[in-house]
Length: 166
Image 1 (cartoon, rainbow, N blue to C red):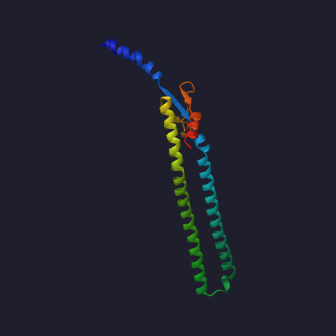
Image 2 (image 1 turned 90 degrees about the vertical axis):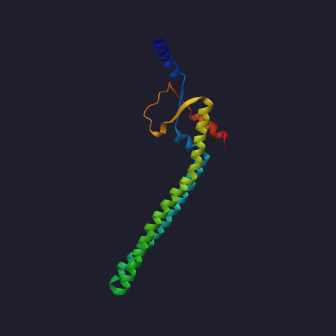
Image 3 (image 1 turned 90 degrees about the horizontal axis):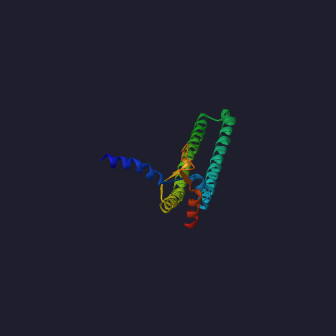
């Protein structure tokens, strides 16, 4: 029995060296994907449009607020109350529009990124299976150290796999 345990202890380290580990920078790979570049451009354009719409609303609120401040002394109490209510309603509408825009951007980003992320993960899995890797780690996820001698950078292999699956 002692001989079997001794043999297992001797051969266990050898089996550890037979395992293959890989690593990649998933953010770098994703940034080079045409679909990611297109989605990012669309998201930036949408965000810019939302920003412009909000700025126009804020400019209108500022203009009406300045008009109110100038003419407040000549207005009767009822007109002042109506104008203040109108300004408050405009302010609330701007706040709601901002929140709605943020939610719409998040939803759109998720809808656009899910298929891109799935494609990247599938490419990593394919490289892992065909290369016989035990693990493929993403260095962009914050891994502080990966040994270059024990782990192979498979970034180019994943990029090649992605180019095959267009």
